[in-house]
Structures are given as structure tokens and as C-alpha cells.
Length: 395
Ligand SMILES: Cc1cc2nc3c(=O)[nH]c(=O)nc-3n(C[C@H](O)[C@H](O)[C@H](O)COP(=O)(O)OP(=O)(O)OC[C@H]3O[C@@H](n4cnc5c(N)ncnc54)[C@H](O)[C@@H]3O)c2cc1C
Image 1 (cartoon, rainbow, N blue to C red):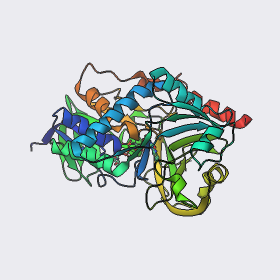
Image 2 (cartoon, rainbow, N blue to C red):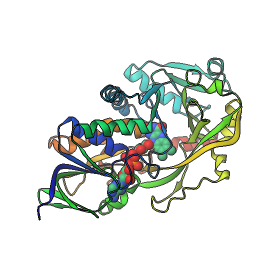
Image 3 (cartoon, rainbow, N blue to C red):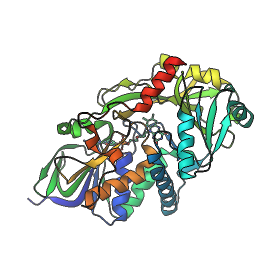
Image 4 (cartoon, rainbow, N blue to C red):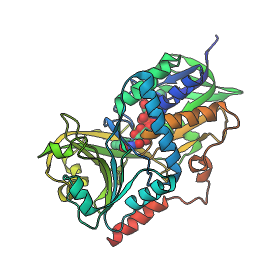
């Protein structure tokens, strides 16, 4: 029996799988995307409707060129599909005394000449009346930051891909895959497919799909919240930038209020170890304690009335940088995993990297994202997280 053959199969049609699909489409490649659920769903790492996009990257200046390129690609996608996905609101990287978020963002902005302003707590309160932080806070304000709407963003990536001939199969989980001489065989309940290359973008399921690699990935359960506020006008788009605020009360981030919703905030720090198949998808009232102390202390008029909540998953690497590389055993198999709670904004760029690693033999992974860094002897914790813990201990 002859098998249906593709140049590339993408295992997992979520965030990065959609990015890869668009990149492959732009190269004119015959590709198949296999997704176990519907395209865009709430069971993985893209639930919660909205994502921050920013360029003055506090995590490492190495991300800045990628974030700029991603920003440009989202714009290109908007033109191609005719639908807005990126909304610029300005963004605040904020830090209480002794925490590094704001200074690290400023360092990235300065290194790459990005537009930014350095602000004190007093200036922030004056410009954005929702804030009640103290004078000793500091912030890097970036006018180009904003948010992406998850559903339109992923739908647009996949629409552009399928229009150019990429095939998407929803509700078709991959049960097994193996390399086969010069290519790969991928089995689902419906068929076995052959391809020259496999791109694995399985999100929180990566460890299972790539069990033999023993990747150092940890899945965390994360909750996001929408709270009612007394005066929504001070949280409206145009009056309230997206923010990431580091303090003893966590690394809290949030968005301006969109019509008909509450204030969307969450804690980037913490989270419980979880497995995607047994994840507790119920949000418990007491869990609001991970964000409400911050909101009550530093934001005006946030009530404890939960308008909406959602559960999502982070897939963490030990250093919180991504894995985008070929597998060590087989050059035909490429993976994008471990996006550590900050990957969404990069989806079209990661898609390009994955396509290039699959199709261009001379393409090399970025050292920051290479699997090789997890060899024995490599530092196992992000130095920044360790420094933050120390700041918190001393604050
Ligand atoms: C609460 C929360 C807030 C976040 N905020 C931000 C933010 O503000 N900015 C930002 O840039 N990033 C943010 N992120 C991170 C970002 O959303 C993730 O890094 C990104 O979505 C990860 O993409 P992924 O493709 O790895 O996972 P997913 O989007 O979950 O995709 C993986 C896909 O693989 C499929 N799959 C798995 N196994 C199989 C199989 N065997 N067969 C077929 N399909 C399979 C899954 O069903 C899924 O669709 C946030 C994440 C969370 C959870």
C-alpha cells in the first residue's frame, strides 16, 4: 500500500505548529499539520485569549532581534489575511526596589536603540492613574509593546498556510512516529503518513512525544484571572499599558480592559507541577491569593469579583530559554519546545527557524536554544531566577 507522502509533517498544530505551517507555506512546501484537538483550543498553552508582545526583552537581549522580526511578521500576516491581531498599547516593565525586571528591559532597549522611557513610581502614578505604587518603584516604558489576540493570531497563521496549500488535519492525534532511513513515518488512528522531515511542536505533550530524548521539561499549571474593577475607564486601552511588575508579591502581568471583560492579570512566577493529561482544569477561589494581594496594594479599585478565569500550561526548561533544534539522533526530526511561558509573541519567527532547520542542511540552531546546552555540567537554573529569589529573600 502506498502511503500519502509530504515534504514535512508538523506534529501539533498549536502556537508554534501554526507558525511553522505559515513558514512552510511561504516556502511553497507540501506540508501536513496534525492536531489532536481542534485548531485553537483551551487544553494546551494558548488558552486565556490574549498575550503580551514586547521588544525590550528583560529575559536576555538575545531575544530583541527575534522580537523585532516577530513584530514585523505579525504585521505582514495582518496584511496578508486582512485581520488585525496586534494591538499596541505601550508597555511597562516595572520593578519594586531591588528587583531587576525594569533595569534588564532598559539594558535591552539601550543596546538595540529601541524607543523607551525610564520612569519613577511617581511619574507612573501621574501618567496612568490606575497605579498606586510607591516612589521607589522604577519602570522601563516601551511605546511599541502591546498584545496579540490568540484566536485571530493563530487562525490567521493557519489561514495563510492553508490558502498556500498546507493541509491541516484536526482531531487526529499522532500515536507513533519513527524515522525510516531517509524520512519519517507518522501513525494516527486514521492513517500512516510518510514525510522527508518531522517538526514536533507538541507543547506540554512534548515530553511524551519525544520520550526517548529525556528532555529536561517541567509542565506547570497556571491560572489567569479577569477581575471586576470599580472604574473601568482608568484601565481602558490608551489609559493603561500592558505591564510586567516584579516585587515580593510575584511577577504579575496584565492588560488593559477590553470591552465587556474585567482586568486580566496573572502571576508569571510559581505554578504547580502538572501533566497535560491529568491537569486540574478547575479554578479554585483560594488561588486568587496569588494575584489579589498585588492588585489590592498597587492597583486602584480592583475588586475580588472574578469575572472569568482560565487554566493554562507553561512548559519550562531549566534556564527558561526555548528549545529549537534538530534531535540529536536524527537530522530529519526538528523540535520546538520548552517555551517557558513567553513563546507566543515569537510564533512566526520560531516557525521560520523550525522550517529552516528542517529544510536547510546548513542551518544551525541558535546556541541559546540548542539541546546541547543540557549536557551534564551546564548550569541547571536560570541565573536571573536565582537572583530574583535572593532579592525576594532580602526585600
Ligand atoms: C497563562 C499563560 C500566559 C502566557 N502569556 C504569554 C504572553 O503574554 N506572551 C507570550 O509571548 N507568551 C505567553 N505565554 C506562552 C505562550 O502562550 C506559549 O509559549 C506558547 O503558546 C507555546 O506554544 P506551543 O506550540 O509549544 O504549545 P501549544 O500552543 O499548546 O501547542 C501544542 C499543540 O500540540 C498538540 N499536540 C500535542 N500532542 C499531540 C499529538 N500527539 N498529536 C497531535 N497534536 C498534538 C496540542 O494539542 C497543541 O495544540 C503564556 C502562556 C500561558 C499558559
